[in-house]
View (cartoon, rainbow, N blue to C red):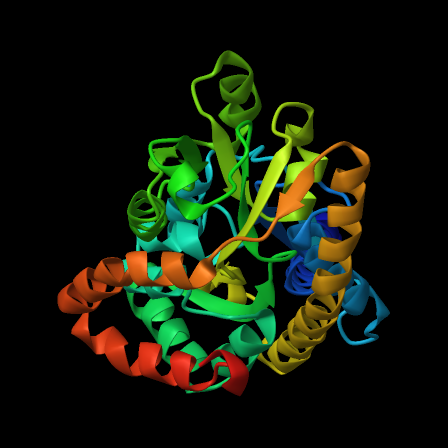
Length: 347
């Protein structure tokens, strides 16, 4: 019997070792279940307060950190300045989940979901109040459903870019006809290109990183954008004339890959959506202030602003509306809803 003791001892040791391994494995699984989710967030703009993207992101991150249920659950890794590639390429990466979230204008998503280009129709919106009113309603819901179905992303919110898009040129634009044949950089999306062409310019689609050098070398005569971007990008060093065309109030879109969102524990998803909504509300409040501040800063740098005949430009871009709605007739109810929400004095 004594000869059996070593065997029993080994058996016990083996059993204990197996139990310990099982406990460690179970502990590891439990730890993994509660490990923080790491999400990559794309932006094409700088990580500073001149960027609508960063204003939204900073507030969202703050909301996550201040929420006891979410604290430590989600880690956001912010990649500004197009560090993860060009915007058009990034939309594809968000669609497949290689990038988890993207903050951008809605315009670039027209490369994947052409119907989103409805928001790029020139003079569709009269101000950002109209943007918020309609995109917080049925129009926004319908567009979000399209994004889910065609691009595999959830829309976490529609923010505001930091002011209307205007045209900045080397040459003085005193009347609408002065824009004729000037080469103006635009976003590489169809309705922006068509809008600027119908306004009389020659639209030149170009990535943002190439604009400054192209202005320097005379490849382009000007650029259209919001005032804070003109200021932060230092385009004012070359273009000294701002024409207040206000041709676009295109919104900001916060898009998240569907599967990435579903990685968030079900009981926390409502908290995340609430944090995103509050960040959207906050960012919208900052937009108007940032535009006025940037206009003053640009004037201090020698940029002269001039009003123009926006009614003339509105008439010039109507063929763009007609062509777009002819191709995407399902978007007409959305256009009707948006135009009906215009301020009464501007309808």
